[in-house]
Length: 218
Ligand code: 5RP
Image (cartoon, rainbow, N blue to C red; front, side):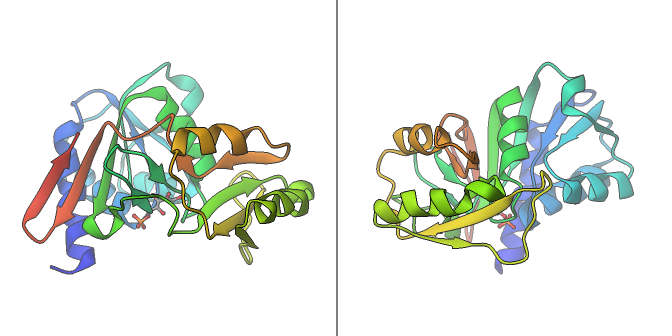
């Protein structure tokens, strides 16, 4: 199976976590696009979706899925999103699509984060994928210096302005053995909007697309 077919498989499989007539949290990316398409094609009636990006909002609206503002809901049963990396404990690196801040906000509203990913995303230790960090533009140079002092290599993402009018540093050369400690430390640096390590909001379930079918990790 191609990577695209694996994404379609897990996008379909995520439907089983959606309860009709409830509001669902929806992430961002090519795998989530498959979920959105499957949801629309299923004909399942939902009360609405809380979206994590302009990209997902536009796709859902085009397919007739009602989109609600995050401030309109107190909690969500599930949040469905992809990942750039996921380890066996459900910690993730996210933000390859620059939507990490809203993704973390919507994930935080949800009781369960259901991660959908093809098997290439499963890793033993996070950090081979450059970790996206959304930053307030005036703080980018200072935050980059802090990462360099850790021995990492931050790169300002070219031509990228996020949905929140901020910038992204992609940080190469990290080996994140304690994702919760890393997230807590970097999150408190002045000017960091969101670090793309999801440990506090880690996945409760991961649907992994493999050549043998969908593998469910909990
Ligand atoms: C966007 C994300 C995506 O979930 C992540 O980049 C995975 O994307 P894809 O499903 O296209 O591989 O975090 O900010």
